[in-house]
Length: 156
Image (cartoon, rainbow, N blue to C red; front, top):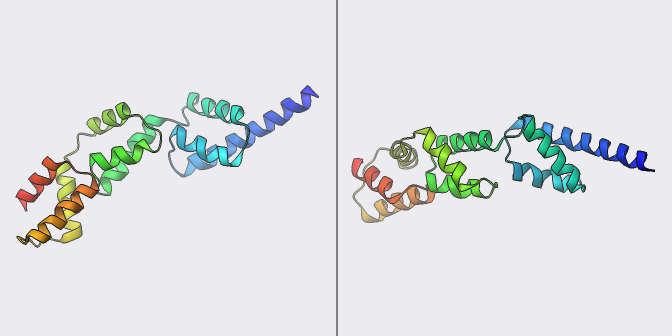
């Protein structure tokens, strides 16, 4: 009987590992994110945690690599630090790691905010208070600090 159980666990572990590898071939995942997705497909939580641990040890699953990829993609979409931090928190990444990765990027956030604003509103400068307010709210929604927004608005 115990041989059947261990064979079943081994088979289950292989299925979980293969499912994880299929997901990881498409894009990077955080540990929490992949654990949540796999938990919906398989019931054996101890086997899931064991497989996830093995994937991390083998370097196939890495929260640092995921964070770097996530931050880079969001910066390319024209999002600010605050929005990136809020989104990545839902994916199970700690504040320290996010701050470290963002600081290592050495990004000019004012430039990103300016590009996002120009993409949305064009080069037309507006002195209308309503229009200026709309632009400020847009940048706030995108996750830029007040200082960054202020500098962008002064430059335009």
